[in-house]
Image (cartoon, rainbow, N blue to C red; front, side, top):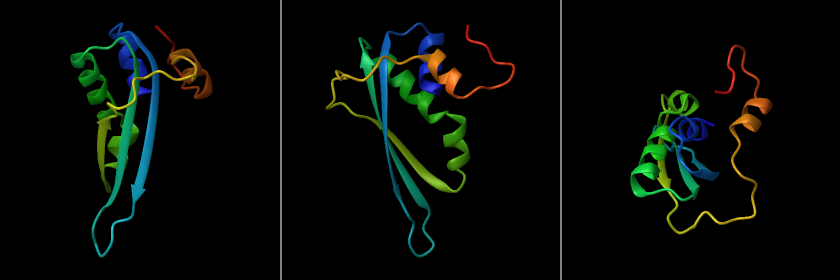
Length: 105
């Protein structure tokens, strides 16, 4: 949701976002870890993709999880972003997760 919000705010041509997450329990006192893989669809150039990757890293939920686990995020460069999934919709995200006092732009 943070990625879509920032793309909309910056008027970036983001058409689709897919996220894969894997989790590994830390053993013998080591921290747990998450690996997050983003697939960004749309006609985005390298600086735009880097900006959206940074937006993903600043997600409030990830920041909270990061207090007790290591989180690494990377872009999946093997996927071209072409898929039959529906387009990203900030309005749909807000409808699914109503937050008081927040309205779309």
